[in-house]
Image 1 (cartoon, helix red, strand yellow):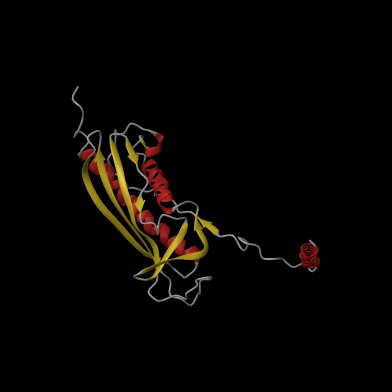
Image 2 (tube, rainbow, N blue to C red):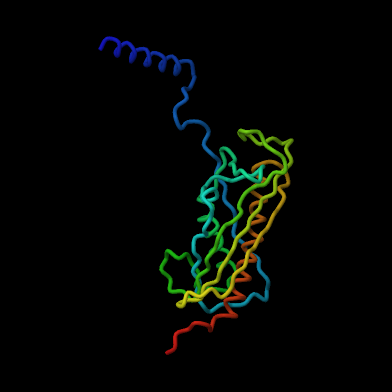
Length: 228
């Protein structure tokens, strides 16, 4: 009892001295919080884009566990996936991509009935997607602990690769499938420019997905309808 009291008193004294001296004590989970980044949907499309009178549901992209996270992935080796420190997406990468895909379809103004599969929309088509690449790729090996980004390091390229399958309802028949990939070089090795490269790479893929889906959907809209 006496020993415990003395230990408690000592801890209290150390804390009081630290406060008085203007110091801080490191606590578990402390430190600088990560900065959060978000990408933008696509908003420009070809003028001859087909107009869809059918409804589309977009499923959450499937992805490997290493990409199914809010952490921003990087590769400086073909056999290892790592992450930037103190830098996160605003949501898990697959969920963020799904949201941006829905918004891109909406921005096209060529389809009214589009949404996530969670909303329970009765759809004519379902777009199944797989996020296969979503990382910054360096051509040189980085330090074991990437605490800060060095301006002297060559900037990475952001690589995005998405596989899509258009499924006709209610027969759940795959009527078209394609893979879209884009790789954009960052202007410099700073988080701002790396995120900019991600935005350009994903935007290129999103534009291709919207154009491809509306075109293939129009070509297959009469297939699989129930007979009256």
